Length: 267
Image 1 (cartoon, rainbow, N blue to C red):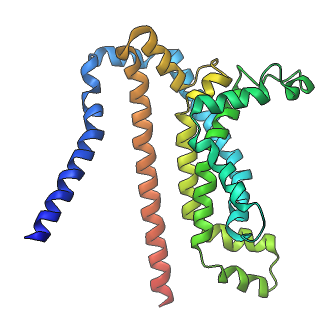
Image 2 (tube, one colour):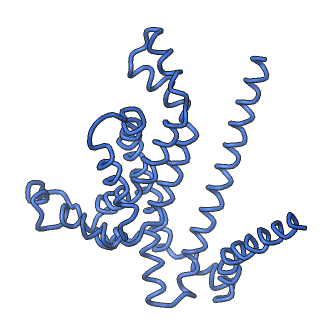
Image 3 (cartoon, rainbow, N blue to C red):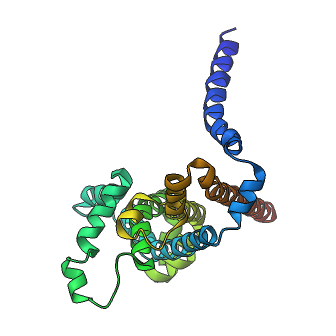
């Protein structure tokens, strides 16, 4: 009887959580007619904003792979240096700060009156695609670094030590052993960072309101025409989220099947 009561409680609270997530998605189409949605989906400004978000988020994620993964490895393997805790706090700051506050901090560095811009007067850091990439990279950085760090920490360090005893350099060990073993966690970090960059609004508004990303376009559509006009952009992001989850699920399933096949062959 106690086990049944526990199961009922778990199912009840789980059902409430699922309903809380699904209900807004299920009612979104009630705000407008399907014909209006289709017409809105053909707007050029909407697709320009959507493609701009995909492009800038991809560039931001590539930058995070290039610089964030080595930093994650440093935090996972070099645990004895002083200031490690302070470094971890610094990495988490973009995660806990409101995006608008992050954008304000970035304006202090890349704004028109900053010292950096005065030395690079020919480069448009704000109100440009570069400004969008700077904002997206900043707010998405913790997702890449923390996920990759967890992946490196969870792998068996003895594999790296064996590779070193066999004559491999630290660089070779990193690329041939560490990265492949931490691949799943790094991929999760890539996906989370990319999705976060695509949906970024606050910091992007501060750095580059123009040209519009998809989040700013939705914000402006809602301000001008209400939720009815903003639905089309929301639907695009929902479709994108579903596609990402499907791709991630299929790739994850194939990867686990390949690992299981290799293990069976070794046996």
